[in-house]
Length: 85
Image 1 (spheres, rainbow, N blue to C red):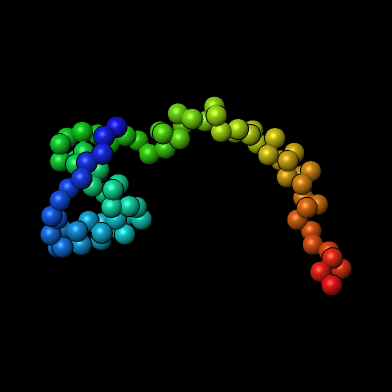
Image 2: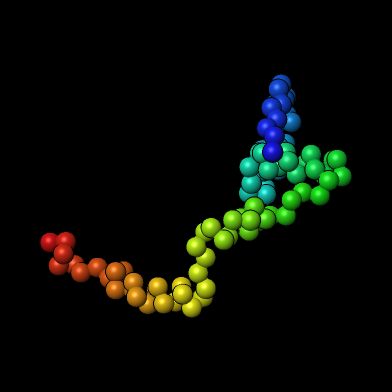
């Protein structure tokens, strides 16, 4: 993957990019990548794909494992007011 720097963008263009980023709740970088891909007729990489590439390293739990963890740690969520006097 490469990095690209674009020099001397006029304020109007930056404003349009910023508005599109705000409307889509994403970064300038993401908007620019989407616009480049669309204008060049290239389909952008599906969202979440990069995350899926590393799931095996992330310690993903099954629903049962999550339930068991929450059941066994629920006690830690209780606060005893006597401990704070």
